[in-house]
Image (tube, rainbow, N blue to C red; front, side, top):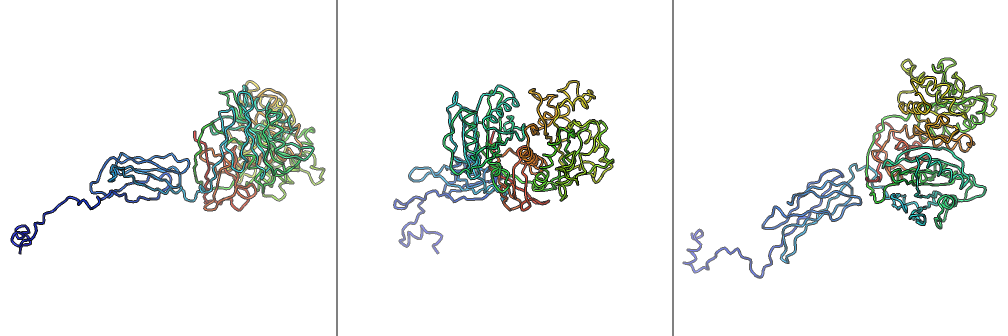
Length: 638
């Protein structure tokens, strides 16, 4: 009965007065604030909402300070918070992010309560091969405002800064791939073509090299212009790539790169690539040189060619102090790679031996085109200049298909005016085009315009270009460029320009506007820089981003090597697998759907710097329509 009146009943029953006491007894420890564990998962680029909870009797709404304690390499994202228990992290790199939150609570010892937070971040696309990336080594170039990123397969770089004003060289070796490289900074007060030409001449003199393909120009991710040229060296005695490189270091640079790594294989013939990167605002340039045995370079089963190209394509070059970042992207395969390739051939008697050399390369040319998965057609036309173009119906123009088992033999027959190798079965020659026979640049224009006029009436593109095909032109002549100018371009000054240089520029622009790849097998007749009428043919090829084979020094080996590089250019231009940023090409990793593809020129993927595309070779990993190609790579941040 007295339950509701405890105090009153207690006084009557003698019970002690039980009043509520909120104080904490001295012998009981106070309740310490405790963090609740926070661990969550998200993806790169997806904002992760974070809320920290602290068990405490007096909740706080402000005074929280969030920070990143540890993040994956190259991560730069920060935590966004207004000081409350809530925050947001939008991670820009995959991996584990460790965060810490300094709370407004204190322990009995007086120290602030700090709460750990773990965020596990998956790649934006979980199937992207970012997991396979290997970060390159970054090496400063002495006396330069530039640095180079090298694949870890290279030996530890050796630096000799003993040049004037602190300049010097960087040397690195890859004995497994049999490639040796050299970088050097030097003064360059002239334009790119002149600077590169003089440097290449010094390299040629130092090692007795022969030009293969000269003048391919491009730009780095910073917009610096560069020129790449290829050479061959046939040594009298067996030697190694490291010895060839060191000869250049001694005779061209004037510095000793020091002892090279052991394990190089002795050979007699070598490939050399020289890249000249010009910095006109600074009056400086960087030479990037790499060399390797020709037999290893030409072997698609080896990594030699890719390792050499990864350093000379200048994708590893960047301003000193620049940082690397990682990205990953995807492209869906939608089409087959196609290319229509016109060869415009001088049929004068002086060209007979050069035509024969082209015929000798036909089998290798077709084999490498097919390995690159290109649906190829080749058309061989006489280097005439009749303004109305060729008669496509009489005697009847026909493309040579890359899938034709007799295609290489047909190309050898058609590219030679006289019977190839005196084969009595050879009754073919370049398709006739009147207007003399030594004007290949004009021949490409009038042939293309004749085919384009026919295209609406030729739905199967039997005698015209396929609408989806990459177009390429190969100018072949040993004659001076004034032939092209005087016999065609100068006859229509209203269209092509009033002066010779104007006409060279006009012809070059004509090919560029129609997305042609342009190459040449020609001589230089003047030291004048492009646009030069005397060098019309070479200038038209190089001015459009192509290159030329110096005809006066090109034997079978040089022509074959050059055409292999031209195949690479066509394959790259025809590929649809472009990348969003300029990669450091040695770091590229590629997957087709969920299958990692190897870097291989035999059966895998390769990189084409001129077109900035991924090229697939062989059949195992070649994407079919609808398959997804994912590429991950390091790139230089600006």
